[in-house]
Image (cartoon, rainbow, N blue to C red; front, side, top):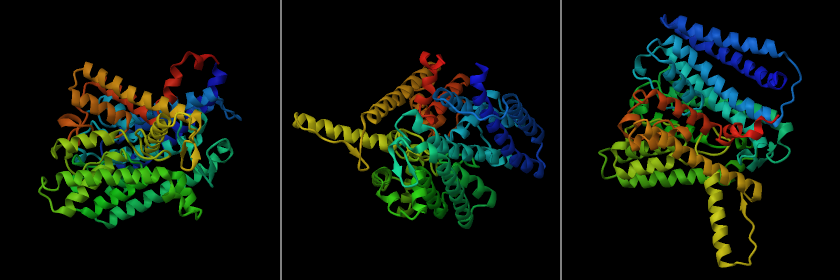
Length: 484
C-alpha cells in the first residue's frame, strides 16, 4: 500500500515545498512593515516546509508512473492538503481567527471562490492581504494546469472537447500536455502583469494593483477592502479594466496559445467563446434596461456598474462595485441564475461552464428533430466536431451531480439553521466557486463570518467539489476505486 501511495505523497511533498516558498514573500512583507504577526506566519511556513521536505525524503526520487487511480488520489489529496497548509499562516498569524475560519478562507482562496470570513480588510497587514491574493493566483493557474494535464484522462467532458494546433485534446494530449502547460503558464503570468500595470496606470496604488491583478486574472475575487470594488466606484477606468481581465480569465487558455502562434481567428471563432460573450452581453443589456430608470446614476456610470457586476458573477470572480441586491427582484433573480453558468472550460472560472449549456441546446434541438422526423438521422456537432456518446454521457452525469450537490448542500445548510435564501445562494456560490451569495448575511455587502462552523466546513467541501468538477472527488467514494 505504501509503495502505491509513494508517488502521490512525493508529489504532495513537492507541492508543499512550493507552497512554503510562496509563503516567504508575504512573510518578508510582514517583517518589512514591522508587523507583529510575522512569528505566527513564520510558524505556518516552517510547518509547511518541514512536512513537504519530510514527504520528499521519505518517498525518495524515483521514476514514477502514475496510474489512473493514483491520478485521482493525487488530484483530490493535493488540493485538500494545499488548502489545509495554506490555512496555517492565517491561523498562527491572526490569533483572532479560529482554525475553521482559517481553513474556510484558505479553501476559498485556493479554489478561487472569493467568499470571506474576514472583516476590517482595510486595516489588515499587507502580508496577509498579499497571501490571500497569492492563494487565488496559485489556485487559478493550478486549475488550468489541472485541466490540461489531468482532466483529459478523467473523461469528465472538459478539456477532451477542444482541439487546437497547440494540442490535440483527444487521444494524443499526453505527450504534449507539459509543453502546453508551460505556454499557458507564461500567458497567465503575462496577463497578470498587464492587468497590474493597467490598474496602476488607472490610479490604483501599487500594492493594490498587484493583489487585484492576481485575483482578477484568477477570477477569484479577493479584494483588499471590505467594500470590495466599491472603493473604486467613481473610477470607471478601473472597473472597465476589471471587466476586460475578468473576461480574459474566463476564456480557454489553450486558445491563447493558438492566438500567440498566429492563428488569430481561433479565439473568436470558438463556439464556447462566442457563447460566453453573447451570454454576458444579453445579461448586461437586460439588467441595464431593468434598472435604467430606477437607479439614480448617470447612464454610462450605471452601464459600467451593471457590466462589471454581471461579468464578475458570470465569470465566477465575485467582485462587487455596488450592493446589487438593492436593485430589485429582477436583478436578484438574474444574478442568482448566472451564478450557475460560469466561464469557459480550460479557464480559471468555475460554474457549470458555457459549453455544457450549449451542448444541452444541441441535444434539445436534436430531440425536437427526432420528434418531428422519427426516421431521420441527425449528426450532433459542436465547434464543427461530432459529439461522441461518451462525451454526451459524461456531460449529462456531471450536470446531474452538479445540481444535485447544490441541492444536497442547500438542504444541509438549511438544517443548520440558515434561512432559505442564504442556504440556496450559499450552496450555489460555493459549488460554482463564485464567492458572494444573496441576502444580508452572505450577499455582496456581507461575509461568511456569522455562518455556523459546521456550515463553513460544508461550504469548504462544496468549494472543493466544484473546483475539482465533482466527479473527480466522488470517484474516491466508490468501492471500485479501493480495489487496487
